[in-house]
Length: 463
Image (cartoon, rainbow, N blue to C red; front, side, top):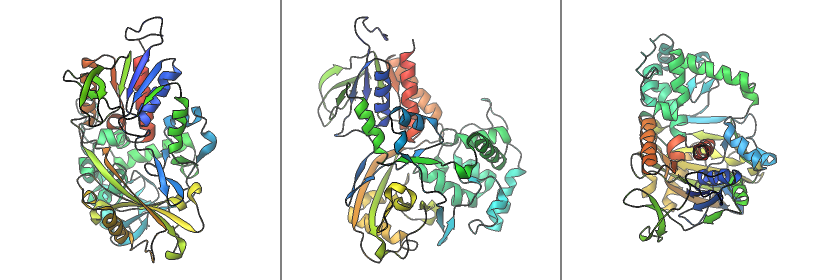
């Protein structure tokens, strides 16, 4: 096989820029297709945001702790990598909670992405007031949005704008924002409907109602996957999500893998190596390849949010109780830096320990840089204070890890899909061998990054 003018007497060669999961999957797919591959990673390690590091004497996920189970790309890759036997699911029937108005509320049943699919199920929850329920019910009688020129009910808008219009502020702020906004470390009123929540966009397009539309999605998912109660939403691996990176690197033993190898853009826009660790060009070595996949964050047009995490190994003797929960979400309206408190040891079997609770406190949203201005000790004490009404500690943790993900999560603001299309068109015009892939473009989750890499490779493999 040859492509892009590759000589017939050699296998075609691909260059991948970036050694996160997107880049490593792209390299793996090229090798599987019989290509040779070089991967350039600017930092000192592989895996990007997928990483484990010690908390006391245990290795614990320092980035994502789970992979979406209902997205086939992640499951299929794990099977191809021989990881199926290591797949594990959250402890069944462990609830999640919201901390609102000084009280813990169990996440209501019958919601998808925080959108209710049956308002009667919310009536038994203390989370939403009677007035809030009545306001949300207007979604069922409001006229559907008028079609636009593209055939959808609306051009792109923020998720917040649509949800406030259809369901009101209370459900938007107390239910939808901590889920969709929290996952994206975003402000729901600046988060693209069509890029970040295509399911909501389809619901309003196809049904003229968010409640009816998401009820149909839920019913279809139940018919396809079986009872929602019997199907996990996420999975992990007994050695942590980092096992995906470890196995990819094993499969890439024949590839040319280069750490401390940044790539820069020359004035004409073409990528080149031959730069020092500060990024200064010391030699204009243009990449020689039949195909190039660039997974670096775009330099312009997409904003990023930073996230800080404090992970604690806490002796159960200093806790009032070991909470039977996967985690607690803290909505933006509460004003805390804290966005989530994840109980790893209650959520995952591989982190369970009868003597020690493993708890992660997460902070950081787009537009909220308070955590960035604090040193580690102050960050730890601040987040402990904020979580203390629901998780009081009567002593010190046995171990604490602080990790800061600077500019970690791309913000899919309204118009994101058009923005991405423009960036990709400009890249292809500069160099027909070049494709862009990664979290900045097609989704922030691990399956989305896998799919982004695989699509880019397919485009370059096909004549």
